[in-house]
Amino acid sequence: MVPTAPTRRGLIAAALVTPLATPLASPFVARAAAAAEPPAAWTLADYEAAMAASGRPAHISEAEFDAIQKRKPAAMALIASYLKSHLGAADPAVMAAFQAVPREYFHYIYSSHEPVPGEAYEANPKPWAIGYGSALSDYLGQAYMTQLLGPKPGMVSLEIGTGSGFQSALLSRIVAQAYTIEIIAPLGNAVSRIFKPLGYDNVHTKVGDGYYGWPEVQGGFDLVIVTCAARFAPPDLFAQLKPGGRMVIPIGQPFKRGQVLYVYTKDAQGRIHSRRDMGVFFIPMTGAIAQVKRS
Image: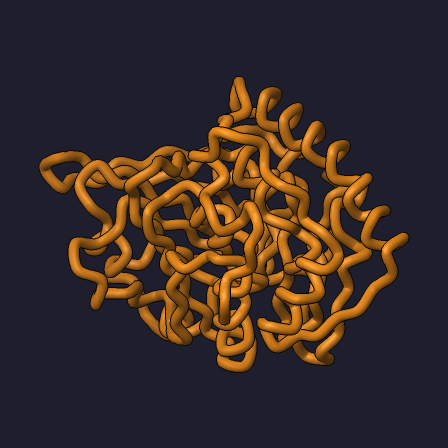
């Protein structure tokens, strides 16, 4: 990936660092990872109907829609190659989720109410601004973090930083229930309406401070993914992680190089184990963490 200006959701230059409404009758109602048959076609009519149902009406030409779909196979091949080179293999469930989720549906600038589907599946993956200081992360970074997280059927996931909603949409095609928290109220409220038109009824959204997690979810989470740099891993997220659970989070100082993606796991006795993965560059997690002094 090519380095770009930092964004709140952007996993930057991962390839260049050293490793340390009413559901539509479409294939997207069923989770792709479990589908036995190839998905039916996602059409322009499907796209426009889903956008309208989500409160983001959009109208594009058949030619523009077809051009987007023609770029998708190359993007899928790039994702598979990237995962193989960085993680040894591409997880079929992760690949199926990327195949199922229509990325153009998430290309939308919320602050100006502007659909920008023509940017989807770009040849040189990069973060895209979606307004309010947030972004749709580059698809290679999202693929890497998703596979690193290790989602499996039956699991329950928590995302800190909903952003465009694409990350939790991906997870929802694999896990049983996907929870996601956004601290920016106008963004979080708008994005909360985009999942049901695709039939993604296992995504649960909340506007709030991700530092505290989602303690009302009984039983906690098998997986936690954080998409902004934290000065340290919030204690409440460890408390809500199930035994055997995993958390992926970038740790580092705001707006500084030297941030590192960490993988934390909780064993059966509740002990936390950590592993440094690779250098990354995110803009910082906001909210309570900026005020809390770590003891």
